Image (cartoon, rainbow over all chains, first blue to last red; front, side):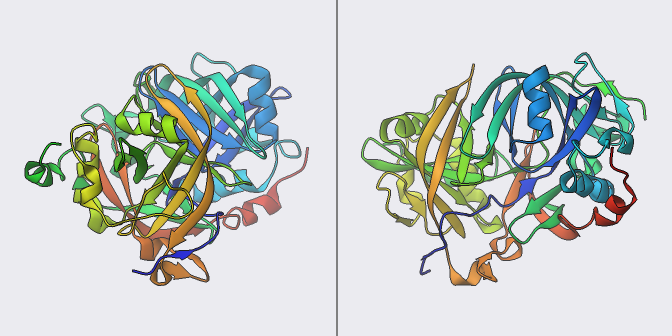
Length: 191
Length: 191
């Protein structure tokens, strides 16, 4: 297993795809984002990292945004949201939009899971800015739930790999978390 | 499509699984992490979000950490790294460890893709802390590459869904990014 250096411009594999909603110039705007993660347990907080885009301006202005998880049948629309800027195109026409309690966090009805977020902090890096949002409320539909929570097999999200720029569905269940290591744990000795 | 509120404790779907490496009390330590994202284009920066754990103490102390992408054949070992604390167990014994230029960023030889990171910023939230690291160098093996970059089908990473705590493989290619929306783009009218 000879390791080789491949420079520093490597990507996480895979990257979950979401659509980030914001408001700017009086209209709802959406952007395809693959740099996203949960970042705090309680209260639930999520971060997204994006460049100096129309979306970033909207979030700075209103301190609110949404995170929408699209399913594989929304791939073309999701991709479109990464191809054009809300500065030039009215992206609000592309989806059926709804709102929760945050009036500047437009959510996409076609997306199985959506979250409305209140900006709590931003971190400006050289090129991109990390927006950290507290999730105020999440929305779904009955048909996506199993035991009261969104079921990944029903939501059918997709991921991105870069720099080859391919989208991937979720595969098979290959394990159980906080479980599959239990057998190995029994063999460990404490320090 | 009647939307229902499911409170605020919702998770991103899916969450990519990584192992975060650090050094503490003179030994290498590893932790399973699913809250991870790239956050800056250039220089490449990644963030992880973790609680007040042994790993967090190590990163604060040394300002260095690693991100290791495990493949599906490492599920049990990865899960184990989320079950026990480096405070009680010497996790360095579980892997074949190697180092690049950062001497406090131990990397796992069994992982197809690894990155050594220098801490550039941390953001303390209520429960968890976001560690933002500049990726100084990434490592892989020839067999994981296609056209010079890590190929997700060869790396075979896996993801987590919560709160059902299931691990998932990557499925089929379902699209091409910055491409599948081009047809829809042609029909759009500029503002």
